[in-house]
Structures are given as C-alpha cells and as structure tokens.
Image (cartoon, rainbow, N blue to C red):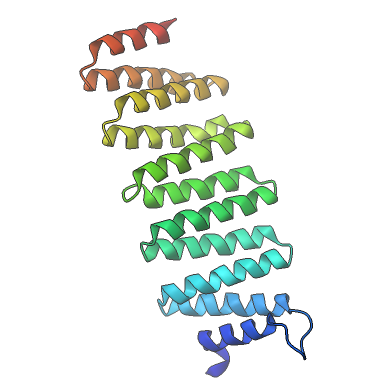
Length: 219
C-alpha cells in the first residue's frame, strides 16, 4: 500500500516543508504527522537507520510547532534506535538534545533521566563520556533539590571509576554521595557511602588514605 509506505511518507513530508513558487509556507503540522508515521513504519520493519532519521525529522517538526515535550520524546526514540545501531556518538547527542528540550518545558527530572539513559547506553563503550553524563544528570537533580533521586547516579559513577581502577575519583564521588544523602536526610545511604569510601581505599591497598578517610568521616 503506497499510502503507508514509509519512504513515500517521508518524501511527502519533505515536500510539505520545502518552500517553492506554489508553497510559500511550510506545513509542519501535516509533515510532522507523516514523519511520525514513517518512523513507526520503519521501526516495525526493523529499518532502524531510516526510523532514526524519521524520528529526528519528527522532533524538528515538533520544535517548529512549539512543542518541546513531544520533540523530546521523538528525540529519545531516535536515541534508542541509535543505541540499536551502536552509534554511540549519536546516542549521546540525541539524549542531550532531548534533555535540553525537557528543560525548555521546565522538567529537570525528565532532563536528568535522558542524560542517565545516555550514560547507561554508552557505559561500556565510552566510560569517560558516561561519567560526564551521569555527573550532569546529578547536577540537574541537585539544582531541583531532588538529591534523593541522584543517589543511584552517584553509585553508577563510582562503579565506573572502580572498574577503571581510578580509586581516588571513586572515593571523591562516594563523598559527594554522602553529602547528597545528608541533604535529604538519608542517613543509611550516607553511612554506606562513607563506609564504601574506606573500603575502596582498602581495596586499593592504601591504608593511610583509608584511615584518614575514616577519621574525616567520623567527625
């Protein structure tokens, strides 16, 4: 059926957004609906590359229609497909764009979640990028005074640092976790964070730093 052929839907949508002598303004509303239909059609047929491109176009359309929330959702769909294609750079770029769009809606928790999704997706392939993404996600939650929701993200960063054998950095984040836990009165999490910091130093056979960390945290 030509009417539901994703490729033809894309072509039709592109025509609706291309200005000409007979079309003086783009019909983004109609075009965006077609891009979304095409994206879903490509995804169902497992043509992930074209589905990704269609969701990108749909996201742009939603932006043009002043709907950043829907634009963010489409961009997250594009990011998920980039993950299937193992295109890690696009995964990061798309989720960051989605995060920015959520911030336009004043939804920092969703913005943080987008960054965390990106971090989880690239954690094995690009651990340094994952650390940056997790860290930025934490900042958004802390700025929104949602420290409780950032605790798991701090744990995730710590785990990456331990895998990379960057024990000093791991301890630094555990101490940040302890401070965040203190702000939201999560006493158990705070104690576990400080204890974990000592254990990391012991694991690294740095008894002097382990003792110093224990004494500092006991004060």
